[in-house]
Length: 69
Image (cartoon, rainbow, N blue to C red):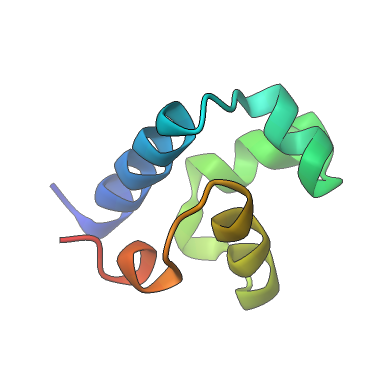
């Protein structure tokens, strides 16, 4: 499993643990739904501020996102 796949999996697990779906996540972050889907599909392209927002929303340590396993 490559790092992109690992990051996607970490996000999915964190979202599931917080019971947050993609639509609710997009609304909470102020992103459009298509933008949210694009960012979740390619998490390696997130800017630092976007990463911080996302991690705060899904209660994920940014270090665990950067180096998942």
